[in-house]
Structures are given as C-alpha cells and as structure tokens.
Length: 64
Length: 391
Image (cartoon, rainbow over all chains, first blue to last red):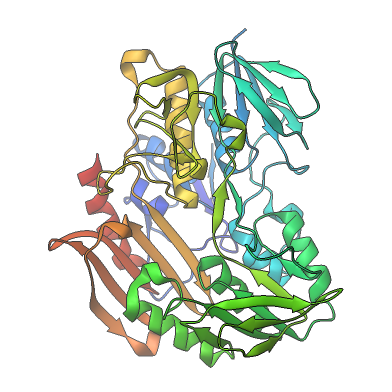
C-alpha cells in the first residue's frame, strides 16, 4: 500500500488524522498534512481507506 | 429490483449514492437533481470559483458517476409516500422502494420589494456565473450579511481588487464565533480594506434598471455596482408539504439512523433524509437541529447509505461531531462541536503574530466545542475527545 497526497488540494482539514493517526498528522506551521508513513502496513488498510474517503477535498490516493 | 431514489444532486445526494455502491448495493440508484450540472462541491464557490482560480469543472465532486441514473435539470413537484411515487415537475411519475431527501437549502432571497438587476445570492454555480458577469465592470460591491458566505465572498472580492462594504445587524462578523474571535476577524478584514457597517440594518436596495446603492437605516447610501445578499438559507422541502413528514424549521426531522419521522415521532417507512434539509437530535441540542456543515452532509449520507443496506436490527447510529472550516485571507478558521449549546466562549490561547487563537465553547463548565484560527493541530485533540463522547 502506497499513499500519495495531492499537496495542491490539501487544506489541512485533519479528517485523515482522525481516521488514521498512525499515518497522518497536522503541524500548525505547515500548509499541508504530514504523512508519517507513506507505505503503512497492511493492517492499517481500513483506517487509511477511511481517511481517504473522509477527506473533504479528496486529496489522498491509496495505491494497491 | 429494489430502487432507491435520491432527491437532490449536491454533496448529500452524491455521497449517499457513492456510499450505497461502496456498501454493495446493486439495485437501481436514481438521483433527481434540479440543477443541470453533475454534483459539485459548494465550499469553493465563495473562494476559488469566485476568485477565478477554479473552473466550474474543478468544483465537481470526485467519484464514479456511471453506475447511477441521473435525472438532472429535473425538479420534484410532490410525493405520495403511500403509493411510493414521486411526481416530477414535467408530470412524470417515478416509483421508489426507498426515498432519500437530499434537497439541501437555497439562499434566502432579499425580503424587500423585488430587486433590481445586479443583486445576487451565492449558493450555486449559476449564482456565481451571474455574479461574475456583473463584477466585470464593477468598482463598488456591497455584501449584505456577515455570515460565513458573506465574509468569504468579501475576502475574495477584496483580493480581486473590488471596493467592498459589508453590512450586518450584528456587532461582529460570524456571530457564532463570539466576540473575541469575531473581533479578530473583523480587524483582519479591515486591514485588507473591507469597510464595515455593523450593528445596522438595510432600509432598501436602491436603483432603477440596475442597482445604484444600498440605503442603510440611518440614511447613508452605500454606492454599489453589484450587491451580494448573504443572509442565510431556506430548506428545499416544500415538495414534502402534506406528505405526513415532520418538518422542523422546514427541515425533515430524522432519528439518529436517518429515518424520517412523522408528526407522532414514528419512522416513515422507506423515507430517509440527509444533509442540511434534515434535522436530527444532536445530544447537545435542545431538539432536532439542522447542522448546515459540509461534514454533516457527508456523515449523514454515509450513515443512511449503510442503513439502507443493513438489516433492520443492525442499523448504525449517527454520531457525527459538527465541524466546519472557513478560509479568509491568511485565517484558517476551524471549529468542532455544537457551538450553539455553549453558554460561555473562553479564549484559552492567542498568538497575534500568527493570527492564531483558540476559543473553547463551554456549557456549565464542560467543553462542548472549540473555535480555532490557524491552530489546526490543537483542534484535533478536541475533535477526538468530542468524538469519543458522542460514540
């Protein structure tokens, strides 16, 4: 599983952090989400897919 | 084959359709929408679309559309819940097994006499296109209403170089944010050149063939080449009048599984509602309330879609924590919780250099929500705590 974030689309809503805090985080001095692990282990798949689904700007792409 | 008809082609309707497919529903899904466009996202309308940095196509909601039947440019005249038939405005009937109300809201029109040309509202792609056309040769714009749409539009119009005056009866913009955050926002807008006329009312929108200005209650005439009326919204539920559904402030009352209720409080078989045409009993609210946030439409649509395919005894309950955001200049405003429940808004952190602040919304000392400017990380902790409590 590989995560790609569209940094041009990301607006720091943080819904992804609510769904998958192991993978995503926000920093106050950044304009885009912080990806803690862009190749998370398979057991986080449900959380990561939920993060992508909850994103208000569809900025998260989960590949294979 | 089971047929689910969704009335309303905005976020709530589109999300319900997508979540139905994601949940494995393989029957008919038909979306009836009165706009011509495929579903689009409304938050960019007052920002990127009005600024000209997005095209209408870039506002379209992401997701598959080929596995849903679209009846666009089509409005609903009425419904018979007993016969399970919708009547469309062209006279045709459309049967359903389940019906999802996702008709949302429309901009509240100016309540005065019929308005002259160049007076606009901002809720749809068509609204923005019409407003844009009148802005091309405009110098002065008056925005009536300092809510979120009015403030976002004012910021965008200033960035386009227009002279902007905002009028509101409130002492501060975005009154739900309270005095402290509202004052910070007021100052930031003023620094960007917005002229405020707060604590005052509009006597009339003046002009003959086209608008000339906005007359205030104290007699001042604000010159205007275009006017934006941003005074709230009304639910699109007139078509449900007399159908036997409980309407609260015009919104369809639903239980926490998303089923519409009748006046006696019993679920109406086969009828569901999502988004800001629906009202549900948030635990911090005194009764059913309409939560007019993007996230509420998303969360209600997900719950209703899940429950449309679930067994009756395995339904999911809506636990959505109200949350909204607004971007104005360099202010990223974010809030979670049902703010209207608060009896106190307390400033707990402020960093003027960063235009950052954090205000807790408390009820009897208990934190029921938070408002933050430029502090997205801090909001997460509150959101997590509120989510745990609402689960």
